[in-house]
Length: 183
Image 1 (spheres, rainbow, N blue to C red):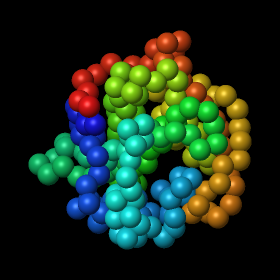
Image 2 (image 1 turned 135 degrees about the vertical axis):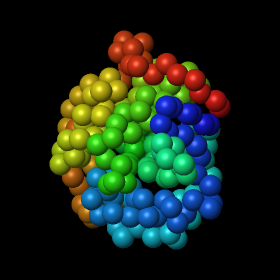
Image 3 (image 1 turned 180 degrees about the horizontal axis):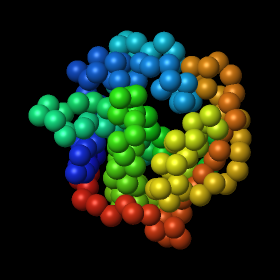
Image 4 (image 1 turned 120 degrees about the vertical axis):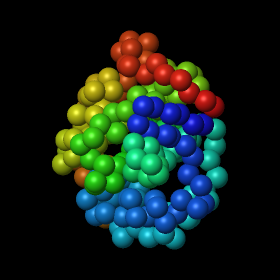
C-alpha cells in the first residue's frame, strides 16, 4: 500500500532503505518511546526488519518527506494485530529533526484512511508511554480516546513502562481520514 499527502509519501520499506532507517530511528530518545525496538539500533536490525514477511493485515510504511528536492525518510508508521489487546493497533515514530512539524498527524490521517477503507477495520487501538505526552496529543488529534492505563514492555529500556491505552471507533468517532489511497 502507498499513500501520498501534501508533504509526505508513505510506502513500504525497501531493502535499500536499511541505512536510512537505522539512521532515522537510531536515537535513544526515539527507541525508548517504542515497545519493540532494540537499543542500540543498527543497520543490521533495519535489514532484518525489512526482510520480515508481512501479512496483508500487517501494514508497515516508511514516511518520506518530500518538501525538499530529494525525498528523505523521516519515520515509520503501521497497523498490526495487537499483541496483548484485541483487534489492531497503530504505531509510529519520527526521527528527532522531524518532530514538531505535524508529520505524525499527517501520516496518521493517511493511515487511518487505509485502516478504514482499504483494510475495512471498524476500530483501532493505540498506546503511548506516559513519558511521551507528544504522542498522546497526536493520537487525540486523530480522534483516539483514552481507554485506560497498562504496563507495556519496552525492549530498548528492558522493563515495563506505564502506558495510556486509546481506541478509535470509526463509525462513532468519524476521524478526518478521508483521502486518496492506493492499495
